[in-house]
Amino acid sequence: MTDFTAESQRRFLQTSEPDDPGAEGVGSETWTPERARLLGALIEKALATPQNYPLSVNALVAACNQTTNRDPIMELSESAVEGLLAEAKADGWARYVHPRSGRGVTKYRHVVDEKLGLDDRETALVGVLALRGPQTVSELRSRTERLAPMDTDELESVLAGLAQRSPTPLARRLERESGHREPRWIQLLCSAQGEERAGEPSSASPRRAVAAGSVGEGEADELRTELAQVRAELAALRGEFEAFRAEFG
Image 1: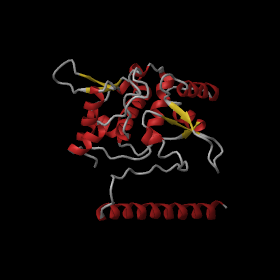
Image 2: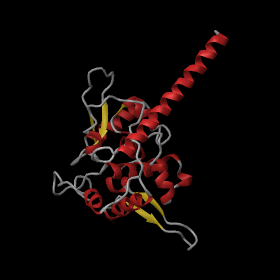
Image 3: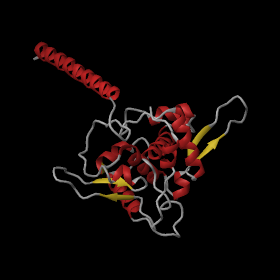
Image 4: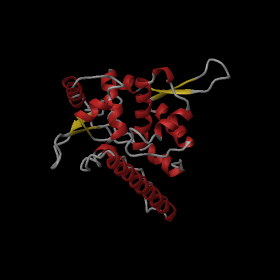
């Protein structure tokens, strides 16, 4: 599980200097991958399931640690999420929604759209790029369909607008890589998430986030076990397919 130590808290609070000292909000800081996951999850739930939004801490932990529609897969603890929420609120990216009576629980919502002046389509694209890293237009259209439906021309226009924002662009199209049919796009609020992965091949299988430093023997054993389980499931599927093919030809 990912938890907060004094050192990790300092790391999460690190910010980069703005390119333009007069720029407001964005440009004065860079999201960490953990903050990108937190805010991306809030954006997704706000647009996809507004009836269940804002989110409690428990719901937000589950949203951050989903194994679908996330890359890489993370394992953020409740205390880590609470720390990220406190930092995001202090920096103006999130707000608390207190219960009207003492019986409810405090919930949380993002204000990314308010801080950056985004409409629903722009917010949806920033959120999906924050959750999944570099993606093609086709992938983005499919993954934003539940959040803010757009046709291809409209989506490309919105992406171009994010890339041309002044004084600080929020997205950038990467050069088409050898072996790929389409170029991919990245969001620029979390450069570590997008730039470092720009050269990686697009994959349908999400990676699992691993803490910095060498992998311990216990973690290696866990990965070996997971790999063995995947191989066993694949073998079982192959067996079922062969049986089906033999029966129905």
